[in-house]
Image (cartoon, rainbow, N blue to C red):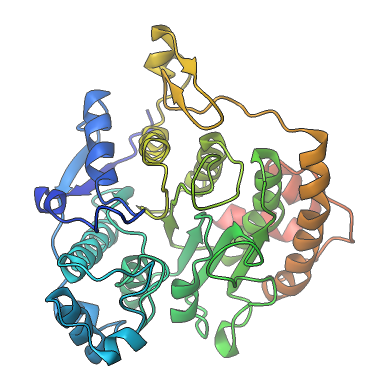
Length: 410
């Protein structure tokens, strides 16, 4: 153990709030994850504690959302959906109107602010706020199960405290709401790795969305082909995200840890295992910066809960001899996306057909993003076709000496 301090943000009140039963977004994932961590003896744990959440105040929500939008949310939650509220996205198939609409969003935002305050006070090193991850919510527009943007609010709160923020979004869907809030700012770097908008909602997040004005170069999008698998995903992260993070030099990280890029998710078309998500998390932890980990997408509930529990355990640095207890109980591979007997997914074989479908598009994306983004950070884009198959920061430092100098400062 390295002495890393963790906080799990939770309150029983969250258990009583829910989306409609037929909605794919299940708030119960938070309680299920907490239950799994407690059953595994990982919460509480040495250096890891549970911290009460609280609802965000109206004044706090108005730091990002307009007063008239918040009024419409409250009206809709009370059963009064107006024409104005409908124009703001309420009442659509992915933005249902229900009684807990405003309260759950306010609690998620308050949980994220609680996590951010713990980091600012240097009380913990990593804070998990899994109630939210509502990255599609805009200043006055609901979208994609998202009404109030907890992760953007946390980024804003950290930036207002003078911190240099890097927001890293690994949800299968593009983090469009967070991107829009900071599109003209250089104090919050937004990075989103997601399934391409050509095949998945919300239909954006393309390579040329790089920010405007003072924020030009500080919005980084890595759209991925449907069917992207672990190796390809990590190659994209190492070739684009890692050198940009090193060059930017964040003082705090906000990570939207959606689990809907995992194979078997009913709403997406990706082919990751949770091993790839953990590999990304381990890279981010190596920066030794305070980190807020939020929830996000994940519509196969068991896979999502297992992935979040594995992420928590990774932050505790339980590995090796402390590998999944279930392996000794006779874990069984049930199919393409279900596994009993441990937190880690089994490896998924990659066929030649998958590689042929994914790699050409992914290589073109990597080249294009590096061409557009790297000059803003003093990094030299590689010639097309070079640098494939990167799996670690050492290779990146050899290719880009600039990143070595920045890393030495971190």
